[in-house]
Length: 357
Image (cartoon, rainbow, N blue to C red):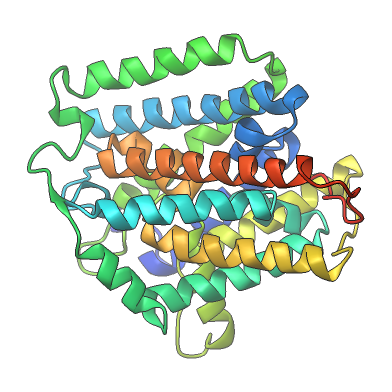
């Protein structure tokens, strides 16, 4: 299919970088304007929690709808995709999800949000991204890889029941159930219509990425991986490419991450929201770095972050992706309650207030 589109000056891999850059820029700009962040919708300030959740779920609904329409039309296929493997690595997914959720509370943002904040001048977010990428790469291929391989051996055979599409009702029923269920929540969220509209556009970037990498850029003689929006693997790949670019080519993920930061930078500059920010104390630095480590390990074990396993994974109707997102939410709620109990149980006023992200 790639050759029929006339991309004569690019290989599929090279075109994927440009494609990732464009999608990332759109994501970065939209996420910066809407403050797209699942953490804010789960454990954020009470005044903004429901609107933030409404924005995130709106993006998810359109991602599910768009992806399933592309799948039903035969444009893409998830056969043999990692989200739909027959053996569910449940222990790794649950452990990773809990780690990632706890880590994003400590850093006050998941990796996608921190990538956007990096573009707005937030040096805390930049440092977290660097540590996250390093730990994720170590968990994938380095010294921490035994954690991944050991937990990954504990599996549950699902057979054909790896996807909601294979359960009674089929893909159409479960797609409608997810979209309508989300619609009921969004209706009561109180989110601004503009933000909901922009969130819908953001969600459609997910099927656009699936179709772009799995159909438009498909070349059986020079194949590339079919992938969509994610941040765990792209962060690790960007770090590796950054230190060895002469021997390792950039891919879709490198372009995506660069585009997100660039898109957020442009949006924040236009709106006058760009401002340099940094750590305020060693204690705060340690908290953020600890969260980055947890997210780096957790993102790999869970098979993705809130975007990779959630926003992009759930539209495949994968049970593994659903389990990962549930575990991430559980980890976030648990860490938030633990931190709240520590704060309320202390007789001393905190000298290190957490910044709003």
